[in-house]
Length: 243
Image (cartoon, rainbow, N blue to C red):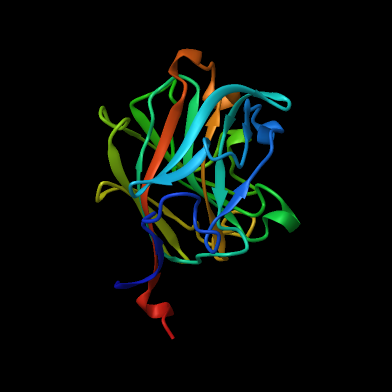
């Protein structure tokens, strides 16, 4: 299978993220996980410098929260259905950090989570520093009931270095890669319903650094400021989709 670049962001211009691609989401309601950060649009929480997107967590009082961070989404601007995704990112170290590169189905606003589907290209929690997770979530399989398809990859140098997280995606399977090495392929079950396999639709990309919460765990206040860095995002379409 061959691919053609559909869109990319190399973060070449210092300042704010490209508004034609990204929307800065704000809020501090815990996001169903008891997270402790308030996502802001402050420059100190989110900025591009020297070809790197920086998402920075701070220990500071902001509205109802004791911490601030940032979250970017391509919702309403850029979507992908099938194809290939490559993201080069540097995961921070520090207890309580919860950086992620992930996707939600376009129908999130109408049918909600987990029915819309979720694809986790990379999740990491600082309280388990040498591990990354690749996961899928659906109405019938998601983390609150602990039956989501997940691949846990152990790697000693996963934090504080840039790594490439990638996936190949078609209507029947999703394959995840770390630094070019295939880690796992999740295959659509035979006769799976849309509730079980909601991945044959458009999804949008999310980049964020959560802090604390049910999975992030206790926060080490001595680590702040703490930064999740992204060097590039590349989205490809499959050759059999090109008209």
